[in-house]
Image (cartoon, rainbow, N blue to C red; front, side, top):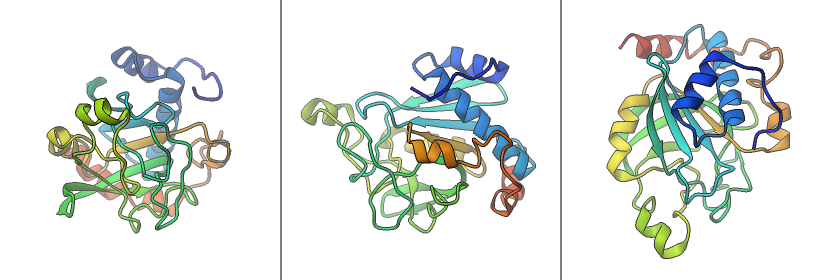
Length: 224
């Protein structure tokens, strides 16, 4: 569960109704961070992705919303890093070579074809928590270890090197839906991150050049 109750918000209420399995307080933090990121970038992303790493890997814990239509597009399993935990995530890092997942807000960037097939680069927006995501090659990609069969056989999903990996069958469709300027929010009730996140600060933090630098890409995505 998220840490504190939040006041009513029309967007949160509508998205919560579309995704009743998603903790409303986690969703409220995601929409708060979304609004902060959009303020600094000078644009509004067309899609919102929410990962709730407080849920076990055996449960769908990735939700993707169309913010224009305010409807749910995907509800999926997602893997975490091998050093982040077994079935449950417990540890997070921004360090290269940690093989851990990172928390906070990201903007999606360009897709590419690499070692894991069709993949999507992520730009972390939170200094100290996820701003090394791109240099760490933390990307969204499909992986065969994200499957119902693996959950049945070993009681959890397989684990990545820190990437939010998804089922191969939906990877391309999901990536093409959120590429080029979507906002992705990865949650866990980590006290240091909750206290230090610039996107969750009461005043939305000071303007950050790294956020503003993404305005062009996000505007291009919103126009498509």
